[in-house]
Amino acid sequence: MKFLKIITLFGLVLTFTNCNPIFEYSVYEADVKTAHKNTTAKNIKLLENTKLESQDFKFAFITDVHYFYNNLRRVIEDINKNKAILFVIFGGDIADQALLKEYEIFSDIMQNLNKPYFTVIGNHDYNSNGSIIYKEMFGDYNYSFEFNNNKFVLFDDIIWESNKDPDFDWLSLELSDHAEFNQVFAFAHIPVDVSNDLPADMKETYRSIMIDNNVSLSTHGHTHSYFYEAGKVDYLIVPALKEPTYGVIHVKDDLFNIEIIEL
Amino acid sequence: MKIKKRLSVFIILLFFTKLYAQEPNLVKDQAWYIPDYVKMQFAGNIGVVSVGAGYQLFDKVLYSELLYGYVPESVSKAAKIHLITIKNTFPIFRKEIGKNLTITPIAGLTTTIDIGTTTFTTLPSKYPADYYIPTAFHFTLFGGVMIHKDFRKPKIIKGVDFYVELGTVETYLWYAITSKEVRLIDIFSTSFGVNFYF
Image 1 (tube, chains in turn yellow, orange):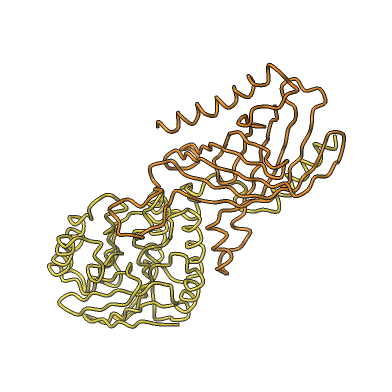
Image 2 (tube, rainbow over the protein chains, first blue to last red; image 1 turned 30 degrees about the vertical axis):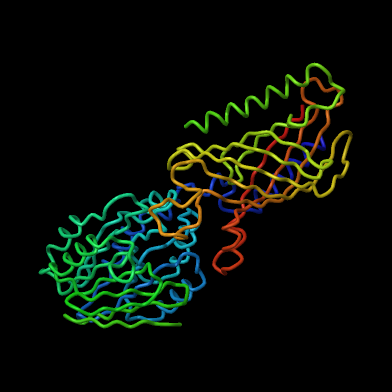
């Protein structure tokens, strides 16, 4: 039957010319592909293979990609060329609408990075089914890792989109062994400066936890612009990827230096 | 969910009024509000399956439909997704390819609203003004081909359309246009469906 033949042929052509995935059911799907899962755990393993003799290394901080994908790629390529940068921390707002497609685009671009990377969750990442996707794709919202006798603590301080308070008890506990490390670095998407998204009492709690636990530097994104405040604890906000910009933190013994790279 | 129930009642009613209205006279024109066809679609970012009814407007220049689409937890890997869609399809031209059989290239767009709890149509009051754009609305664009078959001796069903489409979502298309990192092949997906004319 001619009728059936045409339909079948057309169906086959469409199906085979169109790759991954053939069918999409909703933009809100949270079905993370196996290859994209457990990114944080995979990168912690990768970092374990990076051994260093001296207390002298660099890491990069990039943040707020939203949909500035060309700039993310440019920054990644630049970081790849810099051998002194050993790993990258991404400061949140991986996605703009927290759609699976956006998370996948991000993850695919980050595949080009030739060093480990770690993410902190941003407010945009929580929208729709974003928190489910984040958990599947990356892992815990709050976590830490150690490198070369330094501790890196990544903290979820999103309140409106997540409908919960930041887990300050977790943060205090995680930082309580600070004395065992050369330096301690903290990261959270929403800063306690410039932005008023966090209420005053939470900002105060965060600051006091930083001071009590001897944190060297607390790094953030969210406001899309540069900010630096030196003090007992230093606070840094790195601009968004709206421009091809990133921060490099140079750790040397008990000190650190910050450089903002504008490509 | 109340809105869901109401909607299914509405769709069922559409089916019945359609059948019932046909009974008394087969020659006379139907009342304006009675849909011309009912439809069912698979995929296309408006649900795993979406069902509804539609009208052929302006002398069959536009097919306009109201659909309800559903994504179960097993597919979404999150809560069930309920979507209400207005779908507009434009037949580009019609070509006779057999007896009572026509082929039609089609193109169109849908407007979809999510009626779940994880999205919003107006910004919740906890956010400062313009903090987010509403997350519940999306648009899809598609192109494809439709085959229409008229039945010579209609009993209940007068005719049927079968269509296959390639489509994408407005956000995805925007990313593919503005970024070198997103390829067109990554954003298009397939859908197919049927329309039954009564």
